[in-house]
Amino acid sequence: MPKLTMTTFLTLDGVMQAPGGPPEDPSFGFTFGGWLVPFADADMGQFMVEVFERADAFLLGRSTYQIFANHWPRITDASNPIATKLNALPKHVASKTLTNVEWNNSSLVGDVVSELASLRERYPGELQVHGSAGLAQTLIEHDLVDEYHLLIFPVVLGAGKRLFGSGAVPAAKKLLQTRTTSTGAIIASYARAGKPTVGSFMLDQ
Image 1 (cartoon, rainbow, N blue to C red):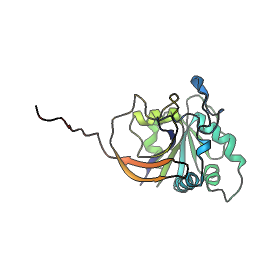
Image 2: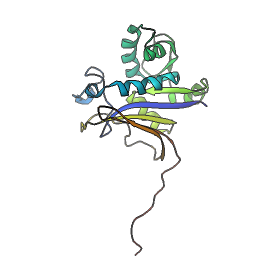
Image 3: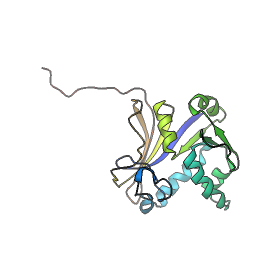
Image 4: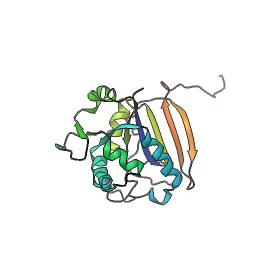
C-alpha cells in the first residue's frame, strides 16, 4: 500500500535543525549544528538501514536534497545500503526556487500539496521524507504524513527549527514500535490514529 513516511532526528525539545554538522543549516543564528553526532552508534545505523531498505522513492526539501547530493554520490561502495538506495532511486525535490536537479534520477515538484497524491501512487511501498524541515511543516499542516519514525536523542537545545510547530494539525497517533540505542536515544514509530480524543480527571461538581 502506498504511504508517505517521515524519518527525523530530534532533540528532547523537538529540534530537528542541522543534526549532522554546523554547515547544514545555521539559519536564525543556530549554533548547535552537529548535535546528533556524539550519539551516533551501531543501533541507530541499523535502524536507518532498515528504513532505507523499505524505500521506493524519496521526497526531499531543497536544502536536504542539496546536502545529500553533495555527499552521497561520493559514496560508491556497492555494499553501502543507504548510499545505493539514495543514488539509484527516484528523488523528488519540493522546491519553487530550483530550476535544475542533476543528481541521478532526480526531478522537481513545484506544488507538493497538489501533486503528492499522484506522486505517491507511482510507488507500491514507501515514499520517504528525510530531514527537510520546511517541507515537513507543509506536510504536517496538511496532514499528509502516514507514518513518523522519530529518533529522539538525550539533549535539549532550547532553540532551533522544530518538527511540530504551531501549524500542526491536531491528530492522534498509534505507536507501531519502539527501541533504544546504546547512547540513550529512543526510536519510536507512529501511524495515523484519527483525531485527538479528550477526557477529564476532574471530580463532578
